[in-house]
Length: 193
Ligand code: GLN
Image (tube, rainbow, N blue to C red; front, side):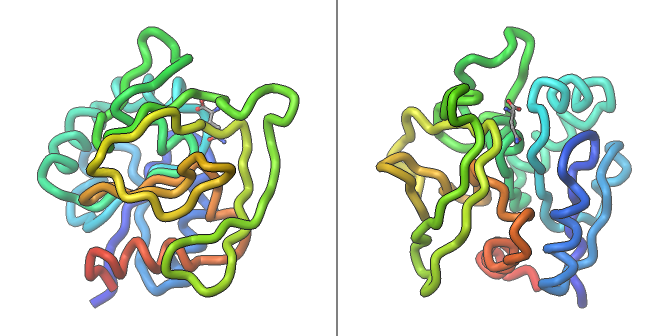
């Protein structure tokens, strides 16, 4: 049976994630309300604006529902703003910004600076033969991470792709390069699809 993978669709770059997930054989569902989570086996949190997403997660009633599912072990893949939403600590966030604290990392919003706020680079990813092209757009920068965090790729010594338990995060945008290897890997790691 095809896996049903939710894509948080409150704001941001969710359509490109749907395309990547479809390419690796999953069925996707846009998640905007708690009811949309029913039957969803895994969730992707896209890039966008984490402050806006945080607010919409609250007003939609999704925040508590998603948190409960995460505690339950639902696999989640957060990219860029999605990584911020999953982090234990958010530096330079808005004071009212909330996160799920699902992975033991501290991230600084827009941590790669204003001068070079967007850049692209080839990344060496653990277990992948060919490099993965990383597109960074006002990306969060990991400042610290706990011993439970497994780093899968780094850029200049800073983790940019990591996993802890059911949570995978990327500070770049794997959905924008037409290369669905990380989406496939996310699903395969959890025996989905
Ligand atoms: N800087 C954005 C934020 O803080 C994230 C950027 C992105 O997702 N491309 O939410």
